[in-house]
Image 1 (cartoon, rainbow, N blue to C red):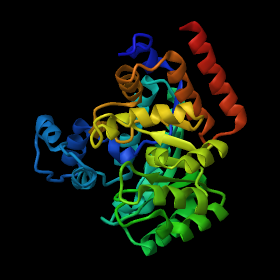
Image 2: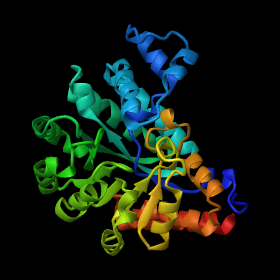
Image 3: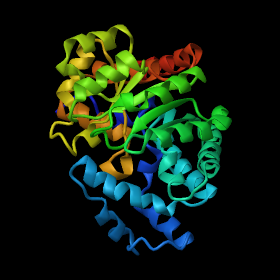
Image 4: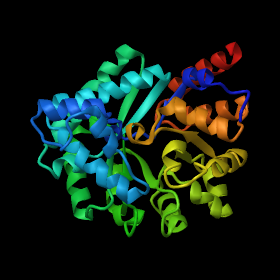
Length: 338
């Protein structure tokens, strides 16, 4: 146990959140409220019943709960409400800057218009300024959908390019390597968009997928990605090129008993820009402050290590150096006062 780092310290620590799926913030209360408002039969009529369905032990069983839950999101207002509810929690966790993933194909494939999704989310991003949270959107491709679907999604998204800052890649990685989407990544980069990609923990061909994402596709960040420790050469590459690794301890804990804590500390020791985030907090039992605290507690992190993780989150975010400097000073002031 860490005696140096308290729950209060991690909750109030200024931080950036860079790995957060907005669909993964759908709390049971909101799911039930939206189901009733939109007259959708989800097969549950109480919050307790909804909570019982949030039960899984691997990526496939999680996705089987996760995607059907999205049926309650129908109108622009629903997406706004989902995002704003998360942003209020982010403010309570002293998240100063957040880059939010969203999955348009999970919605367009069930008949919801792209503009409904992005306009609802973007309105919340704008309104987050009133909460003193600086927010932006990252559009993800679902890797278990076809290349053609990704191509169409990017084309559909480009007229809204002023509303999102980059692209990502998520969902089931098995037999869906990063290179499957190399063309979309090149096209997005040519449009001036930032690039990141999920390389989930303990996947088949993990290291090969990490290598493709880093060496061939030129991503600026790896989401999860801690299996990189299996290849010292790639670890060196990530450190040298200041690649951000966005790790999510509580969600890791669902598939790996130790939350990948040892790997996170190993990467930290090798000057890799690893940072902590909450992934799908409604489903994995905690928001970003909880992720910091649980890791610190279980692995006896020093205050210095916790602060370095927060520093890395700002340094690998997609904001100007001027903004980074402001947040890093805020972090330094907080540490000096606590």
